[in-house]
Length: 404
View 1 (cartoon, rainbow, N blue to C red):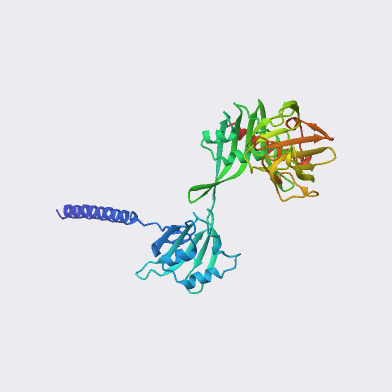
View 2: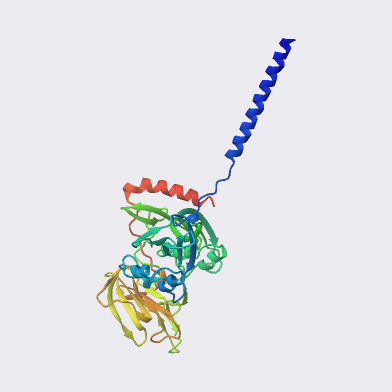
């Protein structure tokens, strides 16, 4: 009998231990699942430690208004005003830029920090405790690789809008293909693909980064842009290793339309007679920037009765270009050497003109030629010693472009 009692007691003890173990395990699980409130930081500060006021610079508002409104001592404002311009200039506050004030999280609400958002990335922290201390910092920028494609119906700009893409991509493409594709002559059905970087700050897109590769099909011809670093310079090349940068730009201004082409027999809208028109008229709003299509020397800059304000640039012993009907000149003078893409003037309608436009002329060996038919050889091709590396990069990029 005693033997049976011992067995029963043993079983009871084992069951009690198991129940205790389960209870302890459940208790531990409960402890492990306790929610811990995450720390939220703003400009590096724990938001729970401060009373925070956010604001935005209004038109004609100055720092004195903001400090007075938020009961920040004038002595702090004086200290900021006395800062060197290289550190901070109170006159450079921009309407729309944001600011944040960190106060002590108590009944006194003493100002601790003032933060001014200089732009979407950079901000300046003013430590208002004791003597003024100033630091300029930058928010981390996240880079996201993105893909885009589209088909031209009316214009490259509209194609970007139609595909919910940032229109800045149109400018990026026009810069890359400036020497290869006439963007004034795009056709319906032309296509493009782009691999590019998007920049984000605080989960918001702030800018378009580098173009990693692109493809454009224009007039049934394929144009690839493959980036490659040669001689420490990043440039774009076609699939044969030729640089997309040519001796001349395809056009001296961006996003306009051709209102009149090169002709030996054109009816002049002002003189009402037929005569040769040895140039291309680009219709564009007054004030549109005009750039030189290549390196050269300014040999002419003055007003003429027919061409209005005119600039001529001699590029070499063979080629010269002329830019007419400018509303005004850029800061250039005869004898200056200019680089490809330099600003030389602005679109206007000076001289004999019925509306704002640029009359662009191209001369080869002193004789006028059709600017739209000038073929310019590529420069800086891939060097022999870099061909194998370039081919590897090209293969990878072409595969990626063909995937979407």
